[in-house]
Image (cartoon, rainbow, N blue to C red; front, side, top):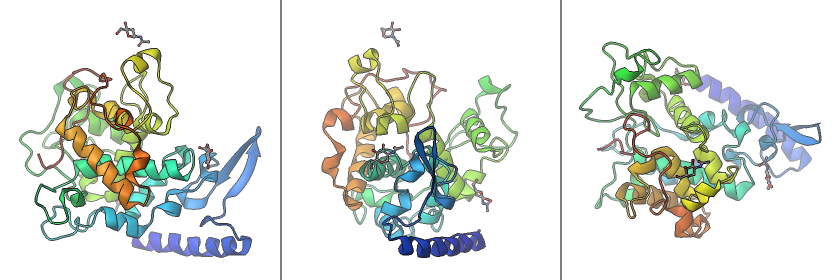
Length: 325
Ligand SMILES: *[C@@H]1O[C@H](CO)[C@@H](O)[C@H](O)[C@H]1NC(C)=O
Ligand SMILES: *[C@@H]1O[C@H](CO)[C@@H](O)[C@H](O)[C@H]1NC(C)=O
Ligand SMILES: *[C@@H]1O[C@H](CO)[C@@H](O)[C@H](O)[C@H]1NC(C)=O
């Protein structure tokens, strides 16, 4: 892994020399081709595969190691619970899989920065061990956990015994960056990432790249049919229907919470868990130099007044609880 990364850095260094020669402002000069009037690019390891999105700035152009460190300053302090686990490299390596599909690369640099802040806002809130009087403030403690500390069940749902049967002796408690719970969520995510998470859910707590990939897959994929992904709801690809408009579901951060957690946090006015996600998002916007004013008005930020996408069906959605609870 380390060697691989060094090779990547080495390759990037060579490409950067080419960039300096060309005087381009972005760090890696993309390869460009036009297909049916569309400009497609390939930017090497970070944005690979002839995509329109790869012609735009990629995440490492506007979100660098020091910024990741600023957002998650407390994660490696002795009292944290996943010391040495989460790092910038795993985040960027995981993001490489989704940048050609628009993660952090849609609609220009500002939208990219906002999407990274929004995604990490969800992540920070779920993995925080910050509390009211924590040093540095409660928002400085994101990525403190990578798994549920004292699960009181193994989250095996027998309704899925034909599709995602539980492996004997294995526990499907919360793990990851947008924590996975339940056999069917490990099963579905594992299928998408081509990793056998049903037999080995522990891979998520042993591999930060995989943990971030699982979270980004969730962010980029609709939870249910006829619903947008959190990504599409955020960057504006999604077209709200008349029903959505009546339900006050608009583009923005509020709807990402509605997509991922539905009635667990939305349509309930001032929900604590919802407010915690919003606070992390705004805090990260500030630290990234974007500024919280870019987040837009409350109707966009919050889902307190939205009608939930997916009214209760206890085993169908992911959990809105954080790993500490
Ligand atoms: C690339 O960024 C520009 C603005 O800088 C934006 O208009 C365009 O939609 C982006 N391309 C894609 C495919 O999102
Ligand atoms: C961690 O997961 C990534 C992404 O699935 C994979 O490429 C890598 O080989 C894994 N690392 C280890 C040490 O298993
Ligand atoms: C819109 O909402 C109404 C009332 O809740 C429902 O009967 C209808 O099926 C919905 N239409 C769509 C396209 O979801």
